[in-house]
Amino acid sequence: MITKATLRYIRISPRKVRPVIALIKGKKAEDAISALYGIKKRASSLLIDVIESAMSNARRMQGVDVSSLYVSNLIANGGPQMKRFRAGSMGRASTIRKRTSHITVELDTKTPDVRQAAQQAPAAEARKAGKVKVAAPAKAREPRAVKKPRAKEPAKSEHGKKGKE
Image (cartoon, rainbow, N blue to C red; front, side, top):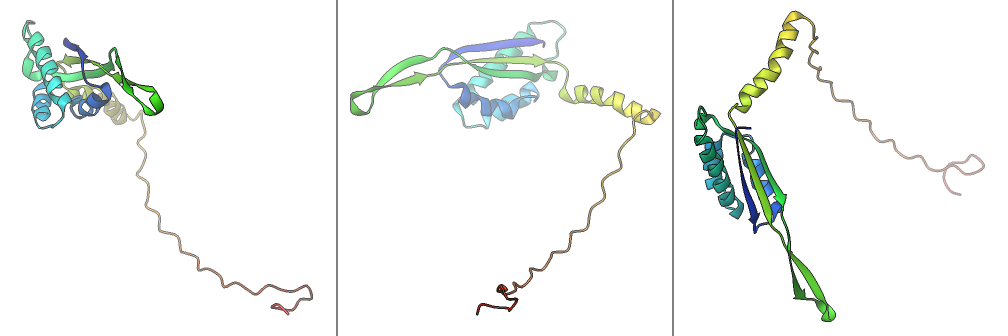
């Protein structure tokens, strides 16, 4: 984690923010912002603000290349709920929970592709050295022959005669 930015007490349900988060998690910060401009949800404008804040925090640090930052962690947690009441049926009062969110963004400098390559490199070296055996691809099976349904025989009576008599 290089930088972190948090947007707290936002009047939007975390459930409405999480689908938008899933679209941009793991992308480069600049690509995530450009993708958010194309999404027609209220949460996208809030996420743009948080990511830009985290990027400006990174600019203040020395030796950090802002163009190489990517969204390493993005979380929408629930905040406090405001409880309101509305008239319900048969003279009752039903509760309305107005939910709030805390959105946290963490930016990092390593690109996800480099991290995946670093994790896969030891496995590739082990295969070359012959320490790990690679399984052969599975052969395709021929489809089974479909059995034809048998014609039903008439029920036998107690005396061994066919049919009902």
